[in-house]
Image (cartoon, rainbow, N blue to C red; front, side):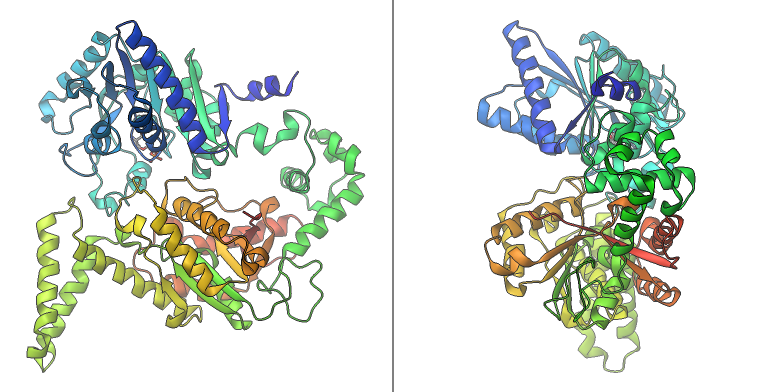
Length: 628
Ligand code: GLP
């Protein structure tokens, strides 16, 4: 069987892996353009099924570009959106109606009458009729020709949460807890996320003639693999696409990582045994057979589809030792390099010593969460460590924290003796409380509130950095403009962001850089920050410091690095892990995922232990960033 056919035997939905979301969006938009123009020539309409979330944003941007630069007209296009939050009016900034206006409809020539989005405000007793009419309207328009889909963390399409049946139609649905958690940042707190939505059903979606599901970034990888390779199940509504004659997945490399052909390529066909693939296969073999690397035998490799590797790099005895040594050499207590020591087998070079180290944190908590102990160690070992918070992170601070601050300020003014001198502070606190009240729980933060929330997070980072022995003068708040002017899922970076980053790099000329976001959804804060950093480093690549700087990637909100992906493993003692947890406690606004970071550090250690390496309490992990 050819490689493609073998892959297909695992993949029950045709899946195209693009190098990045931009390339996928371009290809899909070109396909839609061709369809619109072909129908226009025939004097016919096209019916498009539209999705929301960050996923379709690059696709919409490309459609807008085609309209503005290549004259694509949407006059013959009718659209139906998948869903809408129930309880939000169309002008609420998080309503899908508002999202669609901002992201596409306001920028193209589609007639308003052709736009259909379920209503979020239809009275409870009319929901059923409204949903039935929505179905009828789709049929009256001739059915959906081309349906765009994203995928949620519960594997849902539209808002068809686990349990949605194959034949479900447009209806009101209760949102899953995971879905509400994922929307928490958009709504400034989980408590503000609506509990219900109106969504097209799985059956409605499957009536579409052509279905394309897009997914970007590693956080989608697990669900993509389950939907594409797993059984068709109500637990993952995207898996129903397996039953459709013309459905496909268009994904980027990050979202493809859990597919068999990417994760276990030797099961699908011949593999080019690069050092990374070899390490992947050996670690997989060890985990699968529950044996440390040095105890794997020729039989183990042969029995699990790795005879190829064995004949190229075996026997097992030699292969095991080689990989064991590689893994062993990733472990270092000297993340900045060990001065005056042979560094042949160390992850980081010994010179120069001490190093100027820049640790980039997309939001002010990311770096401490992922590498707080490594930061502490770098400082302890004499390096000049600077933490750079790229954005203020103000959007993640809830109203209640701003409220608490203003309330305390007011009270303080009441108890200090020299109260007249506090008049301006009291006026500030009053204004904050008033603005909080005026905007209501769903309203947009005013610049003053955004500033205050940003300052709260700044204080938290300063505190946490201090707990890692980094002084306030070594914490930089860059406040990249893209973040200050946007909202989650709709950020747009510009040259101003690159300029700010480039001049910071030129000012500090780092020897070592830590960053994150390479595996993230490119429209997330860390995804955008990573791209910006790449561009800034490119801009400086001819400068001497940039050519020799070592670059390390850490994982923040994304899946932790797998054992074979780790190039530097910094072990933590129980005391160090405790200190890290203490540093994390300085933040008042960490998500449950972030709070569980010490646990994930412990898991890294148990993976290394299982591979037969020394048993540590916990490990922080890094991957070498191949030069931009
Ligand atoms: C929401 C939407 C889905 C979307 C999902 C993923 O649940 N109702 O249609 O696919 O979010 O969002 P994102 O693309 O931002 O990851």
